[in-house]
Image (cartoon, rainbow over all chains, first blue to last red; front, side, top):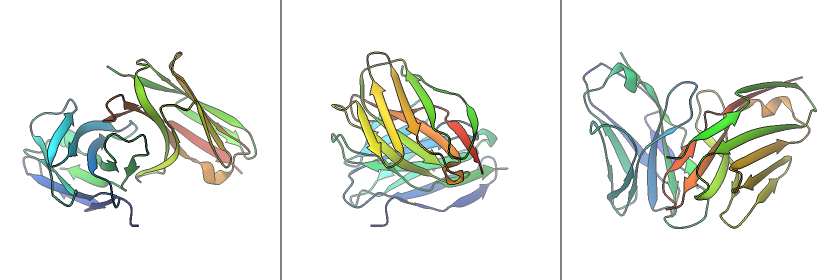
Length: 113
Length: 112
């Protein structure tokens, strides 16, 4: 079992550009959540997807959007990048409604210049 | 709104020492609690999960406890080793089994 995999591992983008990050959940997991982690801080919840729908959303602007595919994999899209979007983006997968662990990927380090 | 605080922010101990990391939260209506380890620039590795009906969980040299009524959790590390050096994060999963709310972590350094 490969666990949660994210791609790419590193990315450099210019302010104003758009970016897409990808996540494959742990085998069997049906729920994917995305988090943004700034340096020295804990991860902040962006949104959660289940059954291809956004189930919960954190306090992030509409520039952040996502998608979940029938195979449960997910994408995070960020439009009109700002310097402040530079962070480690983490994907977590879990089972909906079950009292079990959430597993995290290794993250994508996004740098906006 | 759930708020999670981890104290201390940083901790340095000599090898072999037993230590306790603290996590406090404001909303006791949590579903479960997970402790994670994060090495610099890396993702999160799950250490322990305290499920909704549990108050304690143990794995090897690690023991985590949860007291929902007081809004506190502790992670106990026995006989610390240099390889334990990392940032430790606690996360509260909300009652809807949805999002997790994290503290900012405790950065642990274990000196040989």
